[in-house]
Image 1: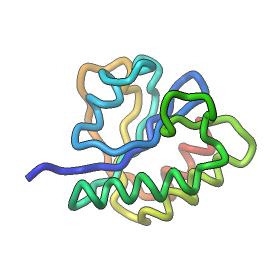
Image 2: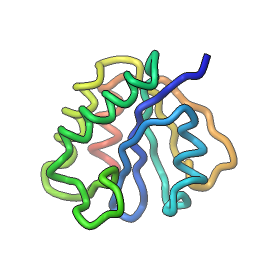
Image 3: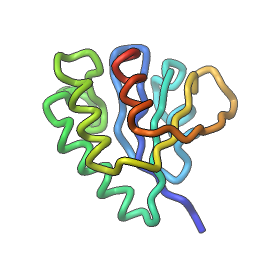
Image 4: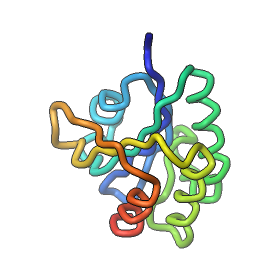
Amino acid sequence: MKKWYSYMAFHNNDTFKVGYSFRVFERVTKDLTASSGCFFCIRREHDTKEEAMTAEKDVKETLHDFRIEDASCKEWHHSKKRGVKLAIIRALGRVGLVGFEIAEGLGVKSSTTWDEAPLEEIKKIIKRST
């Protein structure tokens, strides 16, 4: 059975992408134009594609004020705007308090491992690196 994930991928150019996929690593590192700049990614597993899509929608609603207006899609957001850190944490809380996995340095890897991380640890990383 295919696993589906919602995710946030943070890039070195002060942006991050919100999305869903069954192959997050490939989506973030190979399919995106800014793939080499992805330094941190958070994902959460969902039981179905629909559940992952709903989580993505909820996150995007919470982060609407930080969306890059002239981007070719509505998935890209500013990571340095005032208030974005709190909004990211609030968005992650909306999709759940447990079940998150993180990976770092994706843009320079040919594969990666995902480590389980509690929301508290993710909050610390977000505050430190965005």
